[in-house]
Image (tube, one colour):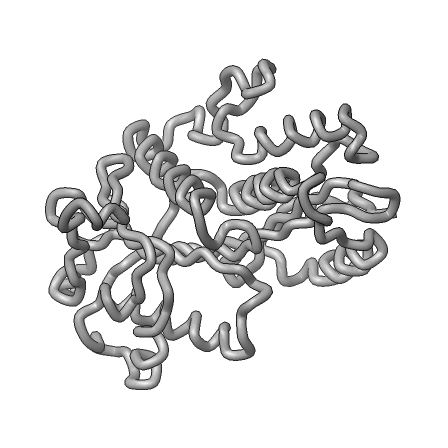
Length: 292
């Protein structure tokens, strides 16, 4: 199971079951990897009242937390995972405090929480594909007991006909970049990327693609997991998510003017990242990267 049972409490008593669709007009819920998924919930719709150990202020804040998806057991409909997918550009000044309150409530009731921050992954069909990927990876890892190859390392034929990692979320974006370069819409066909793991438990991935001289598409994804792992290294997954977001931006190239980043600005951000080495959980492996 995704959710670990808490030995000291009865967590199910604090969780509302996730209802199945009621009729023809209610088609939001779907099943994936033997689990029931409901989109667009709030944490207050999932947890039954303020649990022990949670302050009134934390509870008041956490009940308003929007959840992109709630994942439940298909049989008992008990929630086993809460998922936040959001755009970091729209987060307010109190986001960190609200995040702590949300994590505290989920911890108190034993509900795993997955938080993904990315400008491209918050809503729509693409958000669902990300959620399905996570659930498929978790199901595969559970079935294999984590034995290699891991879900991300399974090889096969890619959309462009090459052999490679079939569960690399960025594979389609890389193939699309080559096509765009061949058609003269890019100055470089290579999607470049990096990832880091922070000591606070956050995994972060960057991806960028040169569109014009000195200007590029740039995406950043951050992942934070509480009591949950899908079986793919979170820093690697964050990098793949950032790369796949580049693919989403590429779909608009030629249709609308893309939002491009000046590489001089990204060089300054990269320098700042390198200065924060002492905050990393693992050694920085991208000293060779440059935006010059």
